[in-house]
Image (cartoon, rainbow, N blue to C red; front, side):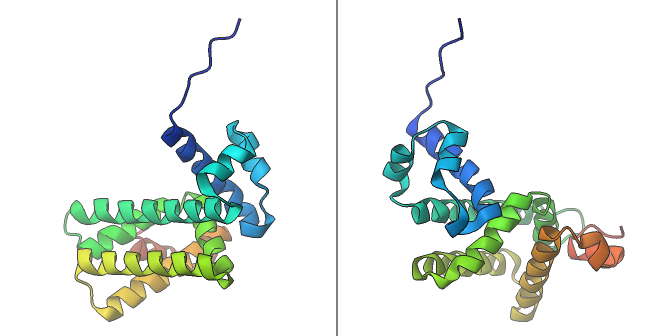
Length: 184
């Protein structure tokens, strides 16, 4: 006899669904992902998923928001407790380096940018990117030029990590410096 199933709250089911959605949308994007693949993975019905998010696009946007939330949380934590001799922007760069290991997070970010031809997606991505920019500016006190470099480097690292190229594309010392890790 199997043990009784543990009943999860609606919030827990929603979180589980969004986590699974991140990995699915990361690999197949908004239009290439079947909601059934996500719901089957987490053991809920498609109608239940649609009751939570309305549409597949609603679920995709929840996955995108989740990705931005993770980056913001990492930046807030890093700026609140920078390493010894480290300024907040360097600490946030180092924290972002830690996120590079989460390939699904990086790919869902890239999928969000790619899907921004859709006005609803573009609105959410633009808003969240602007909020992220403002957060880094406010936490770091960085100049406009420093912010531009920070975000440009982050995007370059995203693409390189998505392509599994950091060790091929960058000089080890340069990559270590970008990530705030000192010498490689």
